[in-house]
Image (cartoon, rainbow, N blue to C red; front, side, top):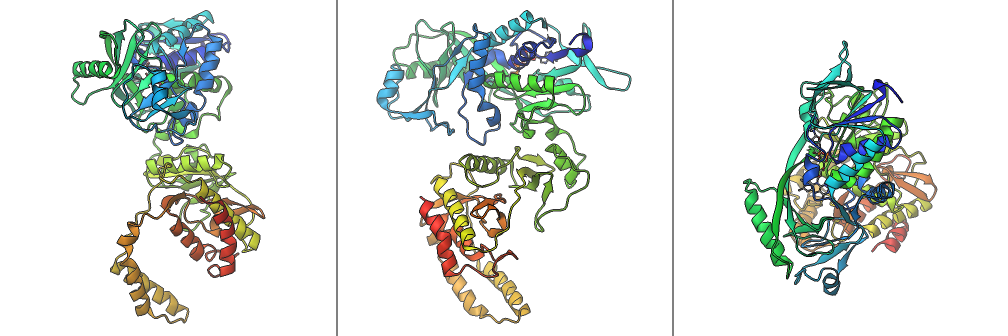
Length: 598
Ligand SMILES: Cc1cc2nc3c(=O)[nH]c(=O)nc-3n(C[C@H](O)[C@H](O)[C@H](O)COP(=O)(O)OP(=O)(O)OC[C@H]3O[C@@H](n4cnc5c(N)ncnc54)[C@H](O)[C@@H]3O)c2cc1C
């Protein structure tokens, strides 16, 4: 590629801009990196540099994190002068919020062996052996040196103030005080500077600047062997032997006080450590997209491309690889839909416009589809199903992570194909469409359904590690009971049946009177999709049902989940018997459930 129009301009020489520039340059692409100050002048220069692939399934950056260790290893093979210290990370204070199997609990003797200076009387300590650390400033520098060696240009001290436009308004490059630079693509990798740069353009992206503190101490001798992250200190050595500490920014802004407290905490915690001399204390503004998810992708159909996320140091090699592939070869499906900037682009308030909502997930449909389900919006679009999911972002993310984890363990349940997105006040999600046979009440179908639910129960944690909504409905009142029974009586009358409503009411009130005692019983609970009914199963083979409507998932007493199956499993489906399970059918169902459950 030659000539001005084929070059890619990257705005920002933090670790994100440097990594994208390097990954493009190593594939022969002409790049120009334009930086208002100097390399790593932003958050990167104040970063702690921890690399940790261990992250909960529902984490916003999980799709990148899974690959970061492999990408750092690759990068150090490509650039041998890069220093990554794979020391592992020792954490204490609280159990790490991760399912990383590599993160194991340490005995006191193991803590002593790893970190002899660490005074840790009764604390639980964990060790993530695959964690490491880099000096982010050095990495940025090394990456940019490679860019230069591969023919790229680095323009320092040049603030980008806007975009070069053609007469028709089309963006064709950038504008700096020193002049304009035309480009085929412009990558906005300028962290907290992105929002300001987009001001006055047709786009706006909510990127917050979140301050945090990096302390650098001269250390006369090695104080720690690993990266230590506790509830009182977070420390590691830099390549030159300095001791680095990361701290939260205080609400009142008293950074000096934070430094003094951090220093005494380090010296109390690390026995026998020499007095620490402060070398530098810097506050970095971490760029954080408002919804927590990375923003990676083109802005509309312009030449602008955005790359911003948190935490970006550890993800930089993966991000650089994925983004450069997309810039050079077109849409990269490895970048999830939920990371696309399109989620922030105004849809004109047309939340009900299903075509616009589908577009947010890159699903194309010319005609508004009809809902597959009468009671909620569930749309089949191509080989996908677009539907509304749990009401809040937190619940929707936890559900997505729970289903993905089940799916990965071989459970036949649909899992989202893209991150849930908040659109016009609701959360939406996309599942694969599952084609197959409806339930018809055959014995083998009942046994297989029981086996599926039993497997799900067996894989559940005992204390809701998945973070699902918790069943909390021990609040049935006399009014609720009367209203329900009135409705039941009127349905019964319309069918020519008479019911002894008073006797039913007495019985229901007796049951409701035991709610408090029942809630205090501590019944064994499970994470479960709940609502396990035959109309939510598609049989892809005679003995293989797939659960397709898992959005009601809850953490609730297992016996309640089974009770719902017993009463409602197949009476809402016209392809099944119009009644509750017989005793024989219930036993068939339980053969699978009981044999596989905890
Ligand atoms: C104390 C602290 C500890 C941290 N610890 C970790 C950690 O352990 N692991 C981890 O992964 N992350 C960590 N982070 C977060 C991490 O540092 C950031 O996510 C990352 O550095 C962001 O990189 P960036 O390249 O997107 O942004 P930046 O580093 O901020 O780079 C943006 C660059 O763009 C330039 N720029 C801005 N506007 C313009 C403009 N108009 N024209 C030209 N140039 C412009 C800036 O000068 C800057 O150099 C930490 C951050 C801090 C502050």
